[in-house]
Image (cartoon, rainbow, N blue to C red; front, side):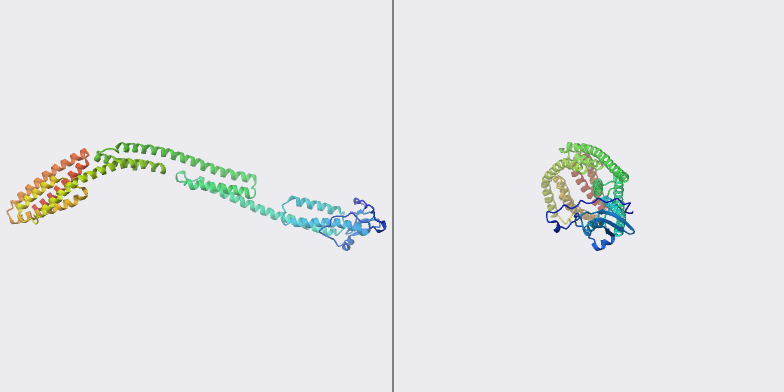
Length: 453
């Protein structure tokens, strides 16, 4: 642009006269703030011409541009004024460069650089304009490059954010697609809650995703959570229904158990409780808490009956202690006749022993085996003597053996009938007593039969 083409810059107002004597006052140009960038005034003279009347012209290569006039100022002051304008713009470029290192994404930087370029184009200053234009071009290039880097970083962060969100959605969908019948609900509920917390953390702290992407991912995530919650509610609703049915079945069993708990019909009631226990084992399970409570009630009803039965049996056993003492005396008396030597005496003794033994009655269960063992010892001693006698005497002794067998068989038949009757009556005591006597007779029969063979 030539001098004729460039509009005149505004002329600064002339300084007011000082009250000091004019001869001692040096005319001064308007004062601008001290810039961070300071030009060498001698170097700046290469890019300016100053007329005697204070008109300052910029030398920009082959061009001459009038930048303004500073009346009543020396050539040095007039030049310095426009050099400071140049320094102001260079300072702005320096400050902009510093901000560019950390704040390239700020739109204000680009706007500021545009304003600086407008000032450079206007050329209302004095200095190395080529240098200024180069710095401006380099700064714009750096700005573009820096913005591209930051955009790439933003794109990477968004991609990572999207990948993290997609991972959360995929995990949520995996949780929601589980078979409700096989789902560990406590663990899965905690997992779904944790995924939601992760989503909110990423949403608050991470970069924003494009609206369409954000909406699509949220729709999937929300759908997975809704499906999971729907399945959870349905599962526990069915569980509650099954639990209610199981409680109903077990409440009925408890009522039946409680109705029997005060029974003193020990044998039949014991069998009924056994049947109730089989039904309990086959019944559906309620929740663990309810099942434990129901079982405690069922068990309590049983305990009432069985404790009473055990107490009754204990009382019976105490009564049998007298029988035990009698049988112990019988064995002690019989021991005095051992070893048997005379067959007739032995048979007479054993006949008396058997009669006394049967009359003594039942002993406590804990002593039954011991008593039977002692009585069997006597039976074996008699059998051994009879066998020896048979070998030494006429075979007619076999007929006598057969008579004993017949007697024992008749006794066994009668005891079996007594046992069957006791079982029909459900009298546990009579059943045990009949069974004890029957077992003894069968053992005697085996001994007698062995002796006769």
